[in-house]
Length: 185
Image 1 (spheres, rainbow, N blue to C red):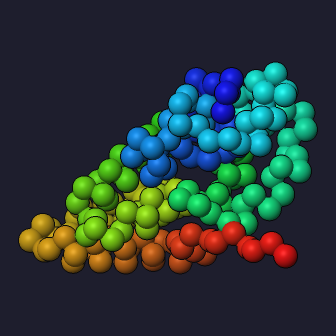
Image 2: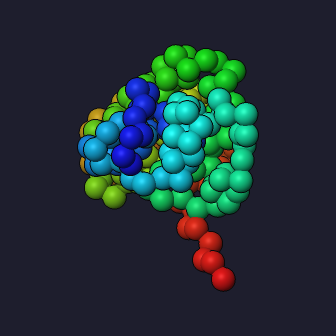
């Protein structure tokens, strides 16, 4: 979007975790306000109208009508944790939150490099976006402690990783399938 520039591209204006987004990691999107490739966005337009604020929570109108129904559906990035993630940034501070995002990004890299059988990329991105860091650490510790995984096929390793991530998600009541946006009308 013309004129919309942000220095922080790992956490979006509206609370999406760009640092673990498949589009951002794949080089298809520069991250929110990161330059060429940015999509037109009503929230970015709003930021420009409000003096170029870097995060929605800096606006006195936050949360506003633009957030109504925004989390009802996911695209390639789960939107469901935006409000929680914004609250977490406000509690921890941006630098501490970004450090956690970098750790999540490293975990995602491990999952994709060693447990992706060619069919799990979206699942792993979704799990890393939605599960708390402590659960991801626990899953990775469990996977790393299973020496027998080293001799298994990538398909078998993928099954083990998916099983552990689903157990963690079920324990928290989190669904790891992307939600389709409800049809209008």
